[in-house]
Amino acid sequence: MKLIRIENAGDDRGSSFSLGGLVGEWIQHPADCHAADIEPGFVRGNHYHTKRREVIVVRYDSGWSLFWDEGAGTKVRSTTVCGSGVVVIHVIPDCSHAIANTGENRIFAIAISDRTYDGASDETRRRVIVSTDQSGQLTSTRRSQVSSRNST
Image (cartoon, rainbow, N blue to C red; front, side):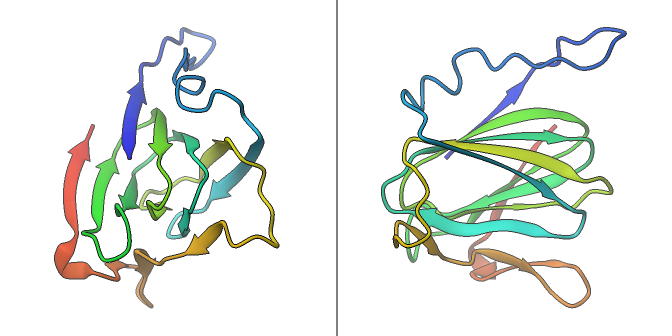
């Protein structure tokens, strides 16, 4: 899992983020793309792909956290992102991943992968690594193994 923060090259007209080759270097032949919003207090993901590589581009205006593991039974890792901007996330096969919107605003994500999604296939499998409890607090399925790094 690799998270890359993209510099804002915007001006008075608004923000502008150039991804350069960050998608193409990871996904040479895109086969699938989907977009999703994540409302404040909600988590998306909690799954892994057995074969697909994925690039996720996240546009945010408030805090959020990325959770991932490196396979079944491995330590859950996390990083928290604050402020506003764009990040690119490179996801490898067998790495469960989830995005938790911990901020006040909706965040937007686009995922691009090298294989077509097929709902009848078992290529995408659920492995919950983080969720929200009844009070809206994040909880890890392997809480004692969660580590955190801040990214500003």
